[in-house]
Amino acid sequence: MTIDAARRTSHSVSSARQRVMAPLMSACVVLVVAMVAAVNLAIPKLAASDLAPSATQVVWIVDTYVLVFGCLLIPAGAVGDRLGRKGVLLAGLGVFAAGCLLAAAAPSVPVLLAGRLVTGVGAALTMPATLSLLLQVTAPQDTPRAIAAWTAATGIAGAVGNLAGGAVLQWLPWRGLFLCALPVAGILAALVARFAPRGQRHPAALDLAGAALLTAALFALLFGIIEGPEHGWSSASVLGAFGCAAVLLAVFAVYAARASHPLLDPRLFAIPRLRSGALGVSAAFFGLFALFFVNAQYLQYAKGYSPLKTGVAIAPVVVGMLVVSKRSVGLAQRFGARPVVGAGLLVLGGGLGLLSLLDADTPYLLYAVFLLVLSVGMGLCVPLLSVGIMGALPPDRAGLGAGLNSAAREIGSALGVAVMGTVLTGRLDGGGTGAGALAGGDPAARARAVETFTDAMAAGFGVVAVVVAVVGLLAAAGFRDRN
Image (cartoon, rainbow, N blue to C red; front, side, top):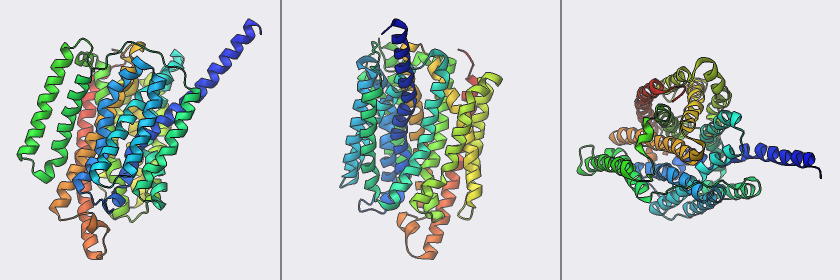
């Protein structure tokens, strides 16, 4: 074979691998992120199951996965940099599958929570490696669009979780949701083993002490938020949790500033684009996953939809993100990143504000319009915020950038679920409303329960909309086209 022919063959193999890698890495992302939304869809069946979880336990079943996922993303990115991203991605898919198997077999709520925790560890190992491997096979000039496509997959994954979860839950019990994830993880692992390149290795410190401090701090914060309605906001346990969260975050900041190789150097947040990007991503997914937590309950309890119809009903979110996210980078090149990011976050907040107008009699068409508004905001801002985070760091720290970007998203998601769940729990408990009344037999009692539920949901959307608008404005104000 001549030298020219060898070069053509090498280029053909490289191009084929690049064409496969983008959808393959996106599929891995969709699997681990979709599980959050799919579990939300299972809440009505789970609440009525033999496990009989309380309203607070339901929030923990959702948030345990998201919290572990978010807190371990940065050390998982460092593990990939240090040990090789392909191997870490394969390990992550295996741990994810093991966690799903444990959750499916859970005889009690504590075992189910343990399964969710293990699954979250697997998701954390999976996520950063996907972006790092994708960038490894992407030409420098194509990097912004590759990041935008990967980011779009993270946003669309929530809607995919609703669609696929609805199809599964239409005919299977909630345990079937976890069982169906097993073959998907296995197929993706086989494809990764076949097509993914050997990941580049870079020196990276794991900083287990920093990871433990950050996880404990965020767990304490979520404990205070989630347990507040049940224990009382002025109770010693709740106030103590908030106090512990503040102390642990302060200790983490001091420790990280002094450590030679910290998990997350707080001085990185002096970079304007990185700081604003992380804040904006957290705000955006705070809003999106507050929607996903309550969407299935609203459509099944208030509108009487089946699980499958509920999953299909979230489709406007997919449409908006698909169409708009592909154009966000081009719009930023024309008008500048800051105005596009600001517009996206404000539109997102406006969509959440519109959702606070919902009640049981709201026509689906109007509901779909509200979802479309929200998704347009997500599509405008999230790709650019992620590009800002990744672009603020050098290429040899891609694992850290991917981990920080994903951590900001998952922590925002966990807080969104916690805040929405807390508002619902407080209002529903105050009105004497539980899952039994919402799904139960007496029409008059069910009508009262649905009215109480929709009022609580509307209040929750109002709170979430205000948070997204305020935090979004702060993020957009500090976002710069260049550092």
